[in-house]
Length: 101
Image (cartoon, rainbow, N blue to C red; front, top):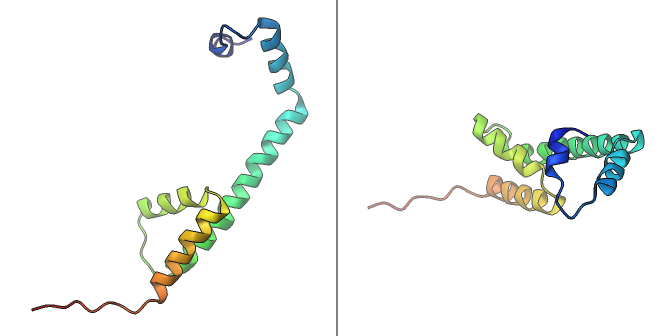
């Protein structure tokens, strides 16, 4: 057992239970499941990112804007759909005229 894992185990977790959990986590099928989940998340984020960027076509975005869009894209579909709808409506809206003196 490596020191980090061993030291992070709580006092209520018996060593035999900890060893069993580590053995299970080291099975190839567990690693494959984790890898598949990571790949699915990557695909979902990429698709969401494309949805969020579409209404911003032609808008100059800096690195902070891209980082924010990527962060949003990693959220669930309802959040992405809500933000995309907001961006689409803002894009389609007529510019407001400023009333001045």
